[in-house]
Length: 454
Ligand code: CS2
Image (tube, rainbow, N blue to C red):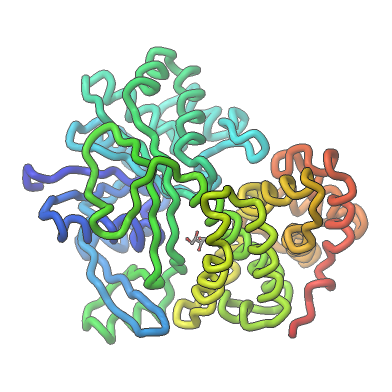
């Protein structure tokens, strides 16, 4: 590594990171002549490391929209550590003085927080194990151990930046980590509190899973084999809170926005884009669709997506409220991208973690203000119907709460939706606080109600 290199340690080197932050970082290097390198970390699975190691962690990005397709080689990842195999290497990378930023895309469940109160879930088996044992298993456990090593080594000035779809992601991460560290070692918690910056960030780029069809297109276009190329859309947005403890790439020179307050951007994105995505995923799958572009081509599903956006739009902060119409129109254009072949089943995973941040906040705010929200209620009903259909078919949900959801979904027809909506780990006190809305949702939550298309 040249001695001018600065390091980002990134936890969760999936396709999203490789199409978003890694792409911005490669562009910032090219624009500024700096040499930021990424050390990737996969928590458990060796697949990404194994696929990318033979190609020195470089890969091809396919950028796809109606105007055409472009291929770009991204070479910014230096190494990928599989934490389960080499936990000490992850801790050493976080403690290394060349590391200025630790960033994360570990998905909603990677934060091990309770959906209802957004605080550390101390009953999570991984967290319970990490509180008493070593080496760590969870993201929070690794961050705590890495920061403890950094503190002992006397190195400071570190930024820990969440890039996941959670409202107030930096704040939520900071609170969870401080709560964990407080139990482990109050001195560490005080040090983290004083020395580490946790910016919030809104990230946005649609990135499907890699398919063999993509591998074949990349090979045909570049004449190079790539075990793990990534496809994405041309659109990309990254809004980052201006809160860094030390140096960072000049991402703003290549399109990122550095702002004082990310919250309005975050709320708009989660409630309009992700909310509509989840509604399309469940209602679309129940109607026999496979891809997002097929779902938005269906008149009824497109109307549902737009209505979710419009109901959510009325809950937006003043600073972005006027942008909602244009934002929603752009979203429907982005969703209508057949080249991306973004599968609904990919979006449908982890519904128990996604609905509480994408749909529920807008719905409860509107209920408190006395506004009817048929589309937001339908979105939750579609998810419950999807759970019920999966349970009836003897299937499994790709969801950390699969066991409880399938048990609830197998109850008699009338009970199933009610018991799903009463699950406190997902909905908190929603059903008790809003019994009429819960009853309306439960009444709709039958797979048959979603099976017809237009
Ligand atoms: C999607 C997101 O899989 C999902 O749940 O809603 O990954 C979405 O594509 C991105 O947040 C877009 O930025």
